[in-house]
Image (cartoon, rainbow, N blue to C red; front, side):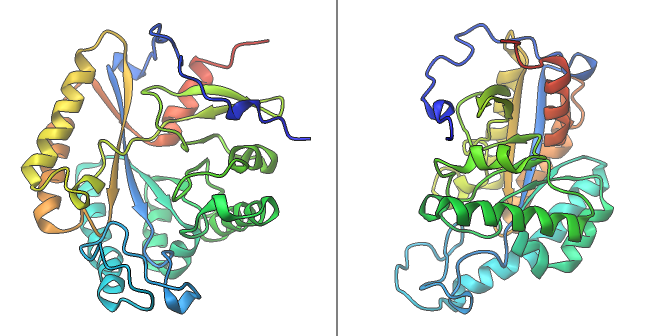
Amino acid sequence: MTDNSHLERDFRGYAGALPQAQWPNGARLALNFVINIEEGSEPSVPDGDEATEQGLTEAGGDPMPGRNLAAETMFEYGSRIGFWRIAKMFAERGLPATAMACGLALERNPEITEWIRQSEFDVCAHGWRWEHHRKLSREDEASRIARTVDCFKRLLGAPPEGWYCRYGPSLNTRALLVEHGGFLYDSDAYNDELPYWTRVDGKDHLVLPYSLATNDAKFMRGGIATAQDFFEYLRDSVEFLCAEEEPRMLSVGLHLRVAGHPGRALGLRRFLDWVKERDDVWICRRSDIAHHWAKTHPPAQA
């Protein structure tokens, strides 16, 4: 019988006594850029869904069922234009990032998949496709996880080290990840600025919290409007965290069809050029953080 104690809410966390992260070279901040690869995995009528997904597009607010060709092509912009613009920015600066990819998106974008395979990016599974895991049976969700891992192995040559659900996890997700095995961490949490350990069915499991605050989704939800807004928000986040007593981690989420547009990409470019000059920021992959934490802050022995 599954032990669900890991689902109990924890309002204390480190209770104000944060561990010293000991990031490499004495960095004050571990900064991870997450590039979401989703295009082609979103709900669509040709794939049997009732309506076109409009999440994080310029077409939000149209609830009509059926195909929305406008929204479909907005997703296509992400894979046709946005990915290559963003990937070029990181490649030109020699900066690492994490590709958070849906399995079906990798299958439908072979050129992007090959670029990732040849790059220094690491990968985190973003599910098989966009679907509500809370609506899946335990057996169906386990099947989705296995299918996604097999897809990563086949297309990228290695399984994903992390997992992050689109639309949020189900009550079974974390236990199924542990049951499947092979995952270094999951990021289905937003509740901290450092990694932390939890126990799932008697096994230690690492959580690397994600963030929707430092995320380009704020463009689509009215939180920010211009490239300068984005640059200043990210810059201020870094400056604030670097000035605090205990080192932290920060995730910056990017979407191909959002940050890939020129008027937004300019803000990302400004931030990359600004932050790469700081010697107190460790710009790293998500798996780098997880491996460092497992080595430097292993789970407490019972």
